[in-house]
Length: 133
Image (cartoon, rainbow, N blue to C red; front, side):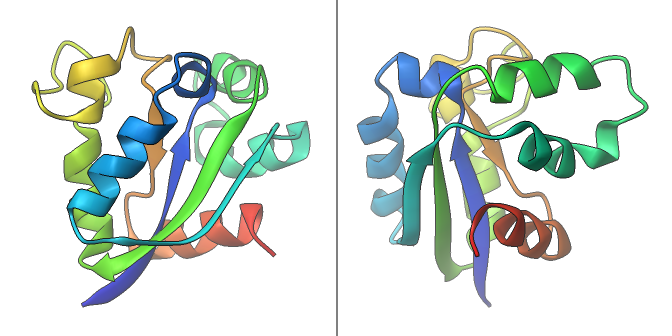
């Protein structure tokens, strides 16, 4: 099924110059990047993005980190794009992410884990609308 999903290269990925490597991995899976921009996430967009985690103890850290530097935001389209991008990213925790995944190869800790990926069609639609008008 043709889908759209959001992929964010977080501030640590931008700072560590991983943008090209991540784009290469996406394109190697024959997915299309149909929109892309670099920006510093505003507090309002960060709060909307992480709203589901608002009551969790790590929420403040998520907000501080995503707003700490520039990110690269991409809308990726393709057959089963959500599942493929999630697989490319790997598990959130670097101790569980397999080698060959973005997080398995580059993640430093649970917070600085290089990328964010949408986990469902509903969340992808919501997240894309938050960052792309």
